[in-house]
Length: 371
View 1 (cartoon, rainbow, N blue to C red):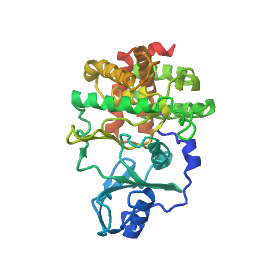
View 2: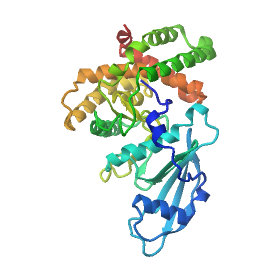
View 3: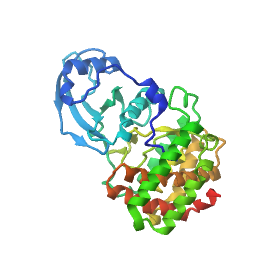
View 4: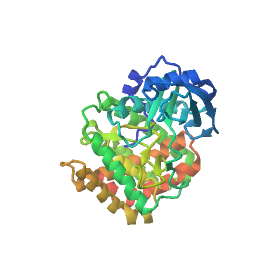
């Protein structure tokens, strides 16, 4: 199930910060940066003396600015000298205003419980009144975006990516903090609200597309929406659960430049939630890959992922169960192009998603799960 656009209620309750949110890199003067790094434990002594601002980069949901920091002579050598300031992008749709809040919640709730986790170190995270900022380590010297969108990675890289996901998901598998200190479980009322919004968005989506949404596609959406309340109940959704990324395409990770020296780092945690592990795999493969690639790689990568879960200690999750969860997650990903189109994402994003996810539903026999 995809609920990337649904705010995490627990995060809303916990992050009404009164601290000052940095809205512009020019506001991050050396004394302020010193205070923030000191509070994080990254700067036990010494102080920042200069903050050089790099070129601003704008993404779909945020702006990212690199910072180069110089320090006083008494500063430890390991003090971070290259940082990224991530903040809200102007002009976001109102329903996306919570994305920064969610990522702040990840770095304040979840990341401290996984100190060697496969994600960048965060030195400061604040949210207030719809604005947010993150002060992250800049891994540009050691890591890179793997390919230019939409080119998929090599098979070797995909194997390493699913290995990273199996280790991450296994760590959080039924973790006692999930749904308590970290994230929340959606109850029947919350799921009903999501379903209602999905139906309303689909109606607008279908009306906008007209005859470009072909009859077979309309038929599968009609069946899915009819079965939705039966398929996505708290009991079924949380029969197995972990911490899911929610936006797990391969451009939301940083791949090591020297593959022998360090691991993959998972980034952009603005859609995370408690949910099925398989939803991240369906998002990565079924939503983003064309049928030929899935036919070659989907099964072996799912088998490799499952072997990784077992290697990390899981004992009660069979491969057949993973396949069922994966197919249910593929059904859930049908919502993604609907949400993206109604949120005015670029057509080049959601139109290919629509064709690929419908092909996956057909190839994997997902309609059998709708009865």
